[in-house]
Length: 85
Image (cartoon, rainbow, N blue to C red; front, side):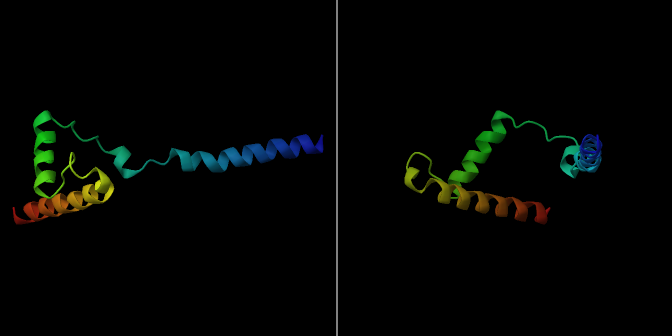
């Protein structure tokens, strides 16, 4: 009986310590989700990425690196544009 009681207490203690951690939400989950992108938004992103050097049909062998580089360039341009306004 002692083992059963100890096991039940361990389970309860474990559940009590995990519950608060699971109840916490991240700030991004508490805010409203962003609006879905429109077709025009996606096309504008593709134009910006291509202008930054991303060429999807041509550079498959360099795919991750050139996509990440284009992403950094586009993000930097957008940050500068927001900073100037």
